[in-house]
Amino acid sequence: MRQIRPILTLLGLLAIVAAWGSAPFGMAEEPSKSKGTLEKVFPNSNKCKRCHERAFEEWETSPLSRSIHSPAFRASLDEYLAFSSGKDKALCFRCHAPHVSEFLDQAPMFVAQVQSGDPAIDGVGCIQCHLIKQVDRSSHPPVPKYELGKTLYGPYKDFVQNLAHQSMELELFRKSDLCMNCHQSVPASANLGKTNELLGSWESSQAVKSGKECQTCHMPEQVGESANGENKRKVANHSFPGRIGKLRQEAAKLAIETSIKGDQTTVIVSVQSLVPHNLPTTHPAWAKVMLEVAVKGKNLKTVYSGQRVYGRVFADAKGQKTVFDFKATKVLEDTVLKPDETRTETFAFPTPKDTRSFDVEAALSYAPVTGSPEFLQRIEAESSKGGQDPAFQPIPIAKQTVNVPLK
Ligand code: HEC
Ligand code: HEC
Ligand code: HEC
Ligand code: HEC
Ligand code: HEC
Image: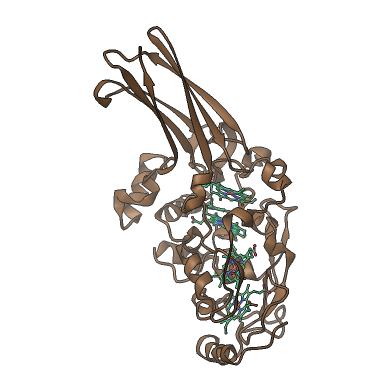
């Protein structure tokens, strides 16, 4: 272990005095007996910012920092509360603001924070992950086991001491188990078993066989400061690339084959998923990936278009289709791209006329939110951007165009 650096010591003292009062995490001595207040036990992420600026700034750009903020979340939480008549108000927060499990009596406050549209509490903030000591994967969805106190768990064995918190190395932080906690499955209103698994047969993917964990791709290793002013070392990117970020370019490959037989043309598009788990992951239940094919003939006019959708279609207890997994009792259709799968899709159309060549364009994207008109209006009304809310925008994943000459 390296020695405490004088500057950090001073910073640390300042931080403690300024931010947390004399006892950093409130109830440091006897966590189990006298639990402190919510803000003391789970301090806000900006309390960590003063020493962990890089991690904070990355996290701030990530979807995790907005896990209880989106209009779509707000609208679907309301839908859930109405559906469940207020039973188990904490359900959605178990993953979206997991510290609720230590303060179940305060679940109504969590709900009120979300409904305010501008929550002051964190959802999945720094400490919501770094106080997790263990994950119990035998229950579905798995539950994080918090160890409340001033010891923060992380990946380093050779950590530098600081005065704000104690540190402890936990293997868990380099393992997928930590993420499975919230990413493996979601509660549906019936036990959907395997059809409710978000990641699919991830355990037998190429990535797992070659020793990769979720962190390998979603918290890529980089060199930087673990804490302000510390020597540069290996750190993990906290912007959690997924739908946002460069990782998307590694999601899928498209290939197009065309065969012309007189006035009939057939296009075969192969969609190769490079993702070691299901694509898309089907929570929220409206999450879908779309393949769109367009054929452009004379003057680039579209003469044919076709579409395929990858996702799951759920039905509720009355047999009606639903975009809410908490209402789902059955899966009617499952077209998600399985880990590392290549799917081939065939499109047939009349060969374009009066042109020397035509273009075939194939595009893969995440589809915008779907649901009843009331639900969509609700999201629009909840959003400061109205109909321009990101939930209504497709997110492009991959694109391929070929030009096909005609004799
Ligand atoms: C306490 C629950 C929880 C844990 C633990 C957790 N996540 Fe998440 N994660 C979430 C939630 C909730 C969201 C969705 C945030 C939003 O968009 O509202 C999310 C979003 C993400 C996204 C963005 C997905 C997208 O669509 O772009 C990635 C990537 C991600 N998590 C990776 C990880 C990795 C890697 C780990 C493990 C190191 C992890 N998560 C651990 C709850 C969790
Ligand atoms: C077992 C953990 C878990 C539970 C419980 C859970 N979610 Fe999620 N939720 C996630 C994760 C993980 C993501 C990110 C998924 C992704 O991007 O692929 C997410 C994403 C979402 C999103 C899309 C991102 C956003 O913020 O707009 C919505 C909406 C959402 N959840 C609503 C809910 C609602 C409503 C409930 C309660 C009925 C709920 N969730 C319960 C884990 C959970
Ligand atoms: C979704 C869970 C999650 C959240 C949220 C999260 N971390 Fe981490 N953090 C991890 C994991 C996992 C690692 C180890 C990754 C690895 O080494 O592969 C880590 C590593 C670290 C480290 C060691 C140095 C480094 O950067 O790798 C520090 C310091 C740290 N986190 C601080 C923070 C701070 C500060 C925040 C909030 C701004 C935060 N973390 C939010 C999961 C999380
Ligand atoms: C007074 C400054 C200071 C504050 C405030 C602070 N930390 Fe740290 N933290 C450090 C230093 C210094 C290290 C050691 C970094 C190293 O070893 O490279 C560290 C290490 C860590 C580690 C790595 C532990 C390990 O063994 O892997 C995590 C995780 C972490 N901090 C999370 C947090 C979180 C979460 C908060 C906010 C609740 C926080 N820190 C607040 C200074 C601080
Ligand atoms: C080999 C790299 C790799 C590994 C390992 C990996 N992923 Fe992914 N993941 C991807 C790629 C690529 C995407 C697609 C990026 C995109 O287009 O959004 C993705 C997308 C996601 C998304 C957003 C997808 C959606 O449909 O909303 C989540 C959430 C996610 N991964 C979670 C995880 C979790 C949890 C683990 C560990 C169990 C994991 N990933 C392991 C590469 C990986």
